[in-house]
Image (cartoon, rainbow, N blue to C red):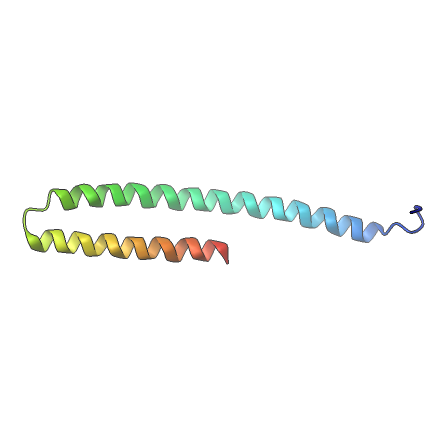
Length: 82
């Protein structure tokens, strides 16, 4: 392959895509880590609250909140993939 056959535009586009992919990956990792930390801290607090429940109603309500938070976690992480 000679320099005359080399397509600089294709090369530059490739470099741009590689750079963009790297930046998008870094943004994804940052967003995921923030979501993960918030989810884990919230779930831990809710689990402790559920253990301290004094009656069936409090226990049931906290369980429903945990289930909802689990559902939201799945929704939010799926949104990051799209």
